Image 1 (cartoon, helix red, strand yellow):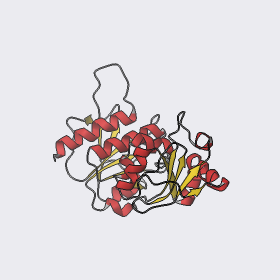
Image 2 (cartoon, rainbow, N blue to C red; image 1 turned 60 degrees about the vertical axis):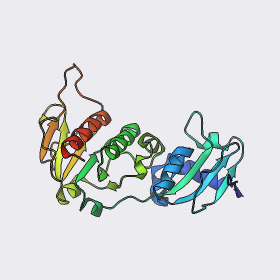
Image 3 (cartoon, rainbow, N blue to C red; image 1 turned 120 degrees about the vertical axis):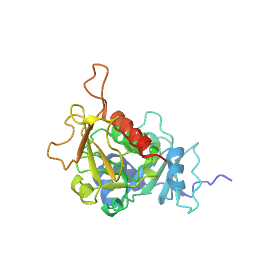
Image 4 (cartoon, rainbow, N blue to C red; image 1 turned 90 degrees about the vertical axis):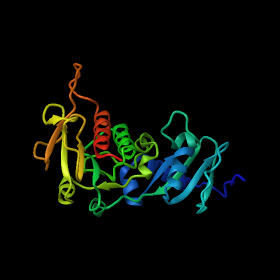
Length: 251
């Protein structure tokens, strides 16, 4: 039986939804973020994330939640004002954030680092590809776009809920004993010849600037190009490297 909304929304509820969707500071201060759409909300619930509440527009049904978080009905037109999508789903959930701490790196053997990645779609795709390749964790360094922003959440296609996200710097990655592998368009060994064994952290740098020359890097790799393109999009490059590393590392 479809669960019906139990409560009506209030103006502060809607204001909070809009703040959580639009402001990184609100998500950080509240330790929560908004997920929109049935599929992503279901992914969060199945992965064991805590749902603070669901907000449902007319014609939409809430996702089944075994913990029975409150469900509130939205008045006509509210979903359109809250969502940043052209065609809102009419279904929102406030999800309690649970970032992994640097200690999550202690036992990790295969990590991907997004270092100052600025585009939400790129970060979401990196998280999605990394999780698909079997990484133990994804690190986002200071200066990287917020992994709980709505565009990142959508681009991750649910992977955000299935792989630990560690918010820390490259120095902590190196201190955890991981071999830091920097990626570059112009230096390092070809990625097909690189050493992908042992405990590694593959770093994807900023879209425009790449990685800092002074970054604590043990080895550099590059993707060999046959065409005239100077470099690949950072998310595409990270995907290629994730699966090349996974291929060498085996099941």
